Length: 397
Image (cartoon, rainbow, N blue to C red; front, top):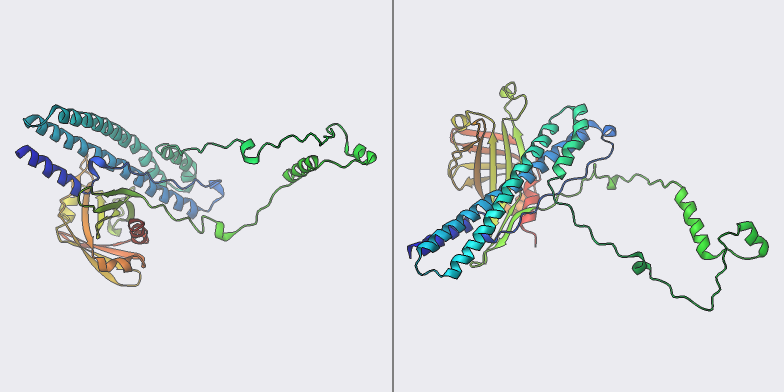
């Protein structure tokens, strides 16, 4: 009975941890914007803007691989716990143990592949981030190489099978009463002298050849210029599942960088990197919305300087029209250090009140004030339409 209760609690923790669990769908990798042609002819601000956007997409791709690796590891651990509980349970049947063993074997294989892909993505993503910080000449030189290595991480798009041309235009049936006049070796002058007219088929071929030899000049349309009117970014859901027992729908969007910040007084110490990088995502669970903020602080003294993200600590959102909304953190986070202890990551989960949704979907985000345990700090948001796009993504049909 104790083992059965253990399995029940473990599976419920898995379901409520924000992960899709054993019945997870494979996360969709975000697509890449096409690399512009003739980088040398584009304005510097256009190239830099594309590089920064590519860096954000690279971080999105890395986040998907990180999440997938975490999920597969958790799935394997749950199945191992189930296997141990099944062996200790005298009432468990041989068939049940064999089913768990089969699932565990598949989970180990999936975890191995996910960890391999996660490791494979590290260098291309780091290369893109480094290239995005280069000066104009080096940026134009190295951007195509970085783009190619990042694109290699994405699966090849499926090619639709081409329909044979005969099936498209149809094969005409032979008409015994029509006499075909051979004119392949008769010049136009001979046809005119004999009074014969050039067959329509021959005329069309000649006309097509003439049209093909003439250059086609397309007028510039500002509305179709993707540099002036970029296409909308795709909606990427890293979690989209419905609980089999409660019927509750759980969704989570992919992370995006929303700001980078280095205090002006510290810029002399952070010449090659930013002090704070914040990435955000939105999650929903049956009408409850969470704004998830992940802060990466490149500072060995981050925990002493910032403390932690306290439970019930606030995140105050300031919109472009001046209105402010206060969100509260669900749980405290003391921060997680990197292997070299030079970087710390803090994650906060802030509840979005339902009454805020309509306003946040209509107005751009300007600033965020974050309450740390040692004080608060204000940050300018660069990805100002983040909340609008991600809320629309969560609420799509």
